[in-house]
Image (tube, rainbow, N blue to C red):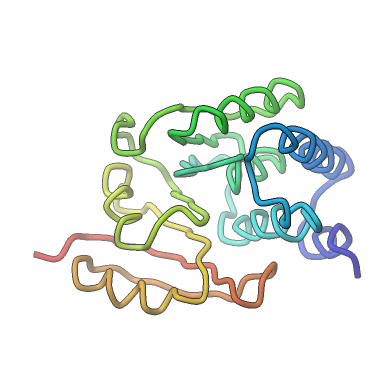
Length: 203
């Protein structure tokens, strides 16, 4: 089964969303020729490496009206993919001006609704979100430092991690108290989806 059909089998996307996801990938590939946004190898099968990798987060977010902050969004993953499939309160933050320029461009061209911030995460205004997401930004301990500015008592953190996730959890547990679950990634056998709840700093 090719990656597009795998996404459609696993996740309920409609024809318009499928079309918009494909246009997003096309725009990314074209833009990437002159501005380095993602690794070229990831565009060999972008429906697997980018769409499936990002869209799997929706499995853990049942309410499409929830507020989401995608920290270090890069070229818009996973945040813009969630916005395309109907999550209405997605915010994206990144300090890389070239990547935010692409995000502004593609949101305007494809009519994607998202809040876009060109800023460092630690300088972003402190408001609470229902979900915090991140993909390949930094190690867990640093992600939790970033996260503490945006969490309420029910905030859920969903991070796409690699095969070092268990070591990162052990390291983070020295400084933080939290409940967590680790799920296998759909897009990469080495990848994991880390879900964190009830985050508090150790005293």
